[in-house]
Image 1 (spheres, helix red, strand yellow):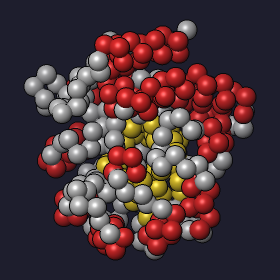
Image 2 (image 1 turned 135 degrees about the vertical axis):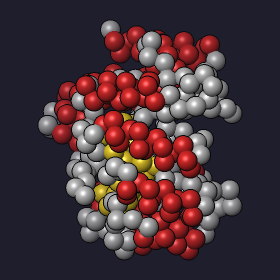
Image 3 (image 1 turned 90 degrees about the vertical axis):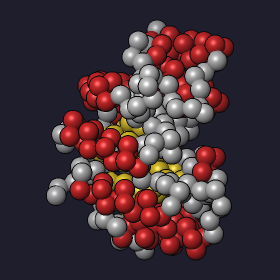
Length: 294
């Protein structure tokens, strides 16, 4: 099977939810079509903005089948297979390999914080379950685990490991990790506020929840950065900053869902215990969206 590389602006897609709490595939497919029309380069299902951890194993499997079939190879598809148990991640990895995924994204979900040996064993076991390219997902604020450069260097012996989405906020990792892994493990931008410096460097991807509500602007930023047009990239990053800053304060999953609702493109709201934004926060999102559109 020919697989495409995860690259460019990677939509960290919301997972639209119907009134009865089920996944709303009609809205999801329209949402993805709109993102592709805006120029999005790749799509990720069940990242943090997609509420990984709030859907069952069976739901995540069906979702990949539905979305991969709908996209039909128009863009690369990555699916998040982070789970509380190694066994579930293994099952999801095997399923992803057979149902249209181009890569898998693995965040270490946990209650009992794993030791370094347990983290390494987990990733080795999940990677061995399929031949799909594997991306680490380092999100210390949410996962409570930091995949440090030293640990990533150890993990780089995994044959299928190709990259890491890094949301640590430490920009040096975009340069350090490729250096100490001999170029094997590339680092993609994993948050939405500190984007200019790594985008201007040779990073393969920007994984962004912002692209749910302003995909064209995200693509314009990326294209300017990759063309070496620093002034244009800076200007677009500055325009995006108010929304990204709000996403950082309230959680990009809440801001993305609220933004879509304000734009008349509702994807429902995340499953409880997550709740819609309160009125004052929603007003901030609206003001930022209005400013971006002005």
